[in-house]
Amino acid sequence: MRVVFLGTGSSLGTPMIGCTCRVCTSNDSRDKRLRTSVYIESRGERILIDPGPDFRAQCLHHGIRQIDSFLITHPHRDHIGGLDDTRAVYYAMNKRPLQFFAEDFTLEGIHKYYDYLFPADGNRRYHGAPGAVFHRVEAFRPFGTMKNEVVPFRAWHGSMPVTGFRIGRLVYLTDVKEVPAETAELIRPDDVLVLGALQRELHAIHFNLDEALDFVEKVNPARTYLTHIGHRMGKHADLEAQLPENIRPAYDGLVIEI
Ligand SMILES: [Zn+2]
Ligand SMILES: [Zn+2]
Image (cartoon, rainbow, N blue to C red; front, side, top):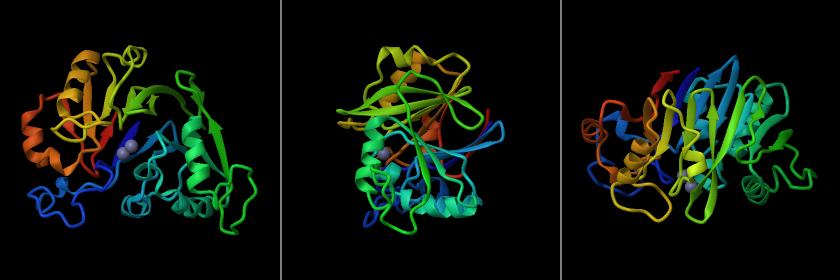
């Protein structure tokens, strides 16, 4: 399995418009973070988690033309803001309907914010709307995509639920503030965990660095990559130097093989 980090940034990205802090003005390319998303190739299937507002630029940059399955964690705009651009994937795949997998609360958000594109009643009003199939998934009930088994699980993003996903040994868990024990128990010693960690200060709906590190210590996966990193986390190089060897800050363009 190959995992490409398309974006590892917070909801406003880094650099953030108008910010002159040392991270936003850094020359290190690893301090430039688009909105959080990953592209996965596994068993011949192409999977994308969270088509955010940078989806188009990320696909063009990485030469991604076709996507067999979209998994979506939650309906915040930084995770679904690229849905309009998925039309291009629909055309590139000769109008094979796009396959979306998400829980109810996410599907409701998609139908609400993209009503012209994906109306809940299926009654398309916009001639450019892509064909799409929405698969309703439920936390802790494994489901099949084209060629992979995926296990969705529950975490909390403040008062909003958020869906984590396991594909093989990859566990993807971002935008979390609370992870219930039944989810933590599913993480195994040979797993590779991708975990959201926003900043050093406490935050109402995101793990900060200490909370993320405590969680990693508790569940003890083989390797962890931090993502959804905001500019207030400091520079990538400083963060990397501070972390133990088995916990790495991800950066845009990082590719890992699992
Ligand atoms: Zn987010
Ligand atoms: Zn969010």
